[in-house]
Image (cartoon, rainbow, N blue to C red; front, top):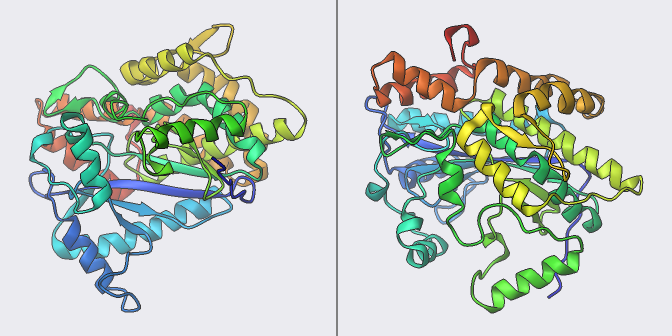
Length: 390
């Protein structure tokens, strides 16, 4: 099988943000995505009722919509683009009396109560995966970074797997599931990997190996389309990007900017190393899998495996003392220095799972208050107050 990789301008960006639709009083999910999409289309008279909105998209469940940006060169532009998408969506949801919420999962809504979007690919997914597919009450943020050569795509994916736990820990925001505290920072991470072809990526060094893998998956009926390969980090051949998909849903544009800057800087760093003739050795898959579990379980308190030799360090110390100092010159080149520094702001203020648990503690376990706090924080675009104990 020949899979053409449509190379992009190096380190350009595209963002995808999955958002839950919730009741403004109870915080419960509401399955009104069809009405939201219809109203959003009506605001664009140049589009017909059968057209698809340019950046507000359907998702698996009817309680969810996804915002998708265009192609941007720099992180501030990409975040601004996403903010414009959000503003257009809010004009519709405010009119309909619906609020927006984003975290890795909804803290208390029942998974069995949610209706699936009327789209053939989603219906096929549920039919095949049954109970596990019905559990996909999860939300994420995806960052696409352009890669200018097919020869870089897989080495960049392999390189990013070393940092998979860093992204998982920074974004972890799904401690609750069906009203219970799971003890994990990211329940989403463990749920999503139950789907066929989801989870940590296979390690390939040559593009022909990836093509053979896809051919095998299609020949045996595991997937029908290339985008049904749902790895945490994956190449996207038709866009010419590498896509970071491991992140739980993030509540604010500011957090998204931080994660986007970290992704872009790492991809650019690997690209420069490859241009200089270096090779990127993949981490052992057993280390990659263990790191994901540690970050899902412990979040920012995870001690992660750093390299092929098995050296370990607290994930926040590694980010603060090694990763960010090394990436700051690249961030300056790319114009995302402020956004990269917000990685430290997340560490200092606390990740989403910590904020949720703190709110639950302050309100005697009221998970409605947890959701409404997230709703308010999305509107304000503010990180939690670190002085308030997250």
